[in-house]
Length: 302
Image (tube, rainbow, N blue to C red):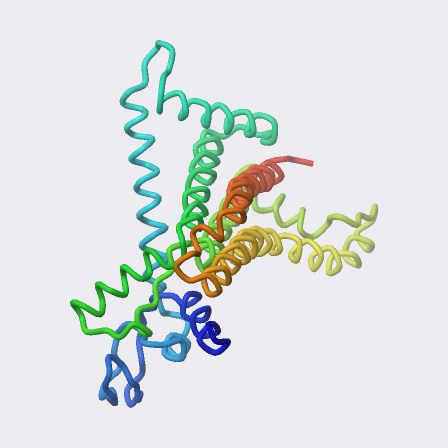
C-alpha cells in the first residue's frame, strides 16, 4: 500500500462518526456535492475538519452507541445469571459469573476500608463494562467499519470516505474521561459525607504541611491548597487518560497491521491479539482497583 493511501487509511480508521451543529453560512462538500448552509444545522460530519468545526457540543455517535450497547449486554448477562442462581453447585455460565463476583468481592474487601453497599456493585460494573469495551479491540479493524460503510453507501448515498465508524469506546477520551469524572464526583461525595464540608475543606487546606499555630497554618494554607487541589484533580485525569492511552496504542498497532497486510490482517495480527488479551484485562482491572483505592481514601478519617 502506498504511503499516502496508508496515511489516509489510518486517519480514516481513527475518526469517529460525529454528530453536531454546523453554523449558518458553512460551506461543505458532502455526499458528492457542495452546499452552503443557510441556517445552523445539526448533521453528521463528512470529514475530520467538519467534526472539528462542530466544536465541544458534538457527539461521537459510534462511541456512545457501542458503550451503551455493551453496557446493556453486560446487564442482560448478569440478569440471566441471577435468574438461574440456586443454592446448589453452580455450573456453566453461572459458575463463571460466581467466579467474577467472588474475585471482585475479594478486591473490595482488601482495598476498601469503609462501609458502603455501593462499592462492590460499582466495582463489578466497572470491571465487566470496561473489559467488554476493551474486548472490541480484538475484532479485526475492517470488519465492522466496512459493513457500516456498505450500509451507508448502499442505502443512504454516502461515499466510503465519509463513513467513519469506530467500535472501541475506550479509544475515545470522551468515554474514558466521562467514566473517570463520574468516579471523581463519587470521591467528592464520599469525602463530604464522611468528613463533612469542613473536614473536606480542612483536608485540602491544612495537609500535607502542618503547623501548631494559627499564623503558621495561614502561611501554609495557599501551598497546601495548591498541592491538594492538583493531587485531587490529577486523579480523574490520570485514571481516564491511562485507559485511553493504553487502548489507543493497541488499536493503533492493529490499524498499522491492517494497513500493511490488508485482507491478511486477522492472521498477521494474531500474535499481538494474544498478547493484547492480557492488556485489555489488565486495564479493566487497574481502572477498577484505582477506583476502589480512591474511594477508600475518600472515606478514611485522619
